[in-house]
Image (cartoon, rainbow, N blue to C red; front, side, top):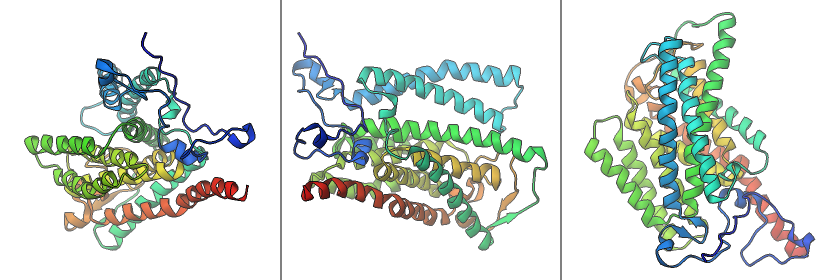
Length: 400
């Protein structure tokens, strides 16, 4: 009889071992931040023989989990997309190519439902819960609202810099009356869905799952796959942004592997998911290498936010706040896409290297400074809480 795989403890649960009269295993911690960002240690022995190829000590191996997850997401998305396209064409009579809030809502609901369906099945297979995929952690609502604020402020700072440099000009207000609030709500809902889907895909399921089963060599193989595909398909659209993020992560991730740093798997996974996030943006029209690199870089900032807050809620909020400000409030292009129903009117001017050109503010060199500021803000605001959470149990043990 094959050994039974025991359920993995729910991520983020905190057991007061002192009160229960138990002794913590060596290296274990009650730190909620660590529990929320790094999958728990396996509780059962590894299988032997052919089964070992698919099942490890933590259940289905991470690589197979990712493959099944991606296949399921695609299988869910295909029929849902067919239904959504039929509704858009035959019921709503939406024109092709237009970026409207209604079309955006339809598209995002399709991919989000596909993500939820595949994640729910994977949770059953892996004997986990949906919230285990980096959606637990303390102060979730506060992190989400803080992320929305950070996203809006960060994009506003970028627009301010572009305006001060003469690379962005404002035109007349495009909306009036009830339209202002109607479009604000529609685009707000749309970009919350965007945040849930894209962060749910990259910073929730993939980041969590890769963390529990990746090392530098597997990460390097995936990165090489991204680069190889782009070399064969190279049609511009900023592919050098992907190459750059791959190179930047190479040495740090190798050193983490060689020094066997605790938690190295999280950062190897962050390298992969951040590169993947930039990679998928190469399919957008109007992208340049700066915009692609910025997408990958902000993906890394979102991974850091998981490390310091214990969940992906800040990342979800920041993603939504940034896109809403960019697309609706300021009316700039978003990853090469210009939307209908925006509040303000803006037009890029001058050298595209500074203005962003058709890419929008994300294609300007100034965006790199804003991404760096967001990283510093996350570490300054939330990093101290992580240090305090880690230090408190150690101090109690010392005093005890």
